[in-house]
Length: 129
Image 1 (cartoon, rainbow, N blue to C red):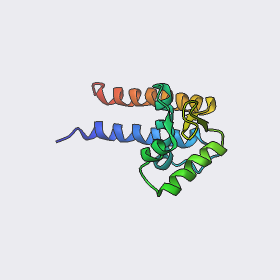
Image 2: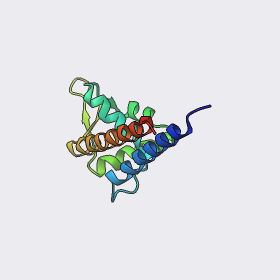
Image 3: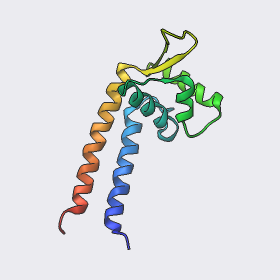
């Protein structure tokens, strides 16, 4: 039988994560966790790894929506100042998507806050009763 208290603590930690994501984008209520997390986190992660994603690669990272819907999400994030599209210097036909410094700051804050909360929550579940 699983440790239900530990699973409840984990559920609480995941809920905190989702709520913090929503609060991070505050006024931008259109940045729903499920629809935008894969896109924005995928873009930041690839950028940090030194391998920015093309528009096509970024649309493939998303888990829901038609190609048109996925491209509209990217356009919205560009229009809102979270992503930028840049042309490949070697192949002018290819466009890469990079996070703006604002998005990077938001993601870092979100991840640091939620990592601390998850650690705290999981430590409570392991503490002797």
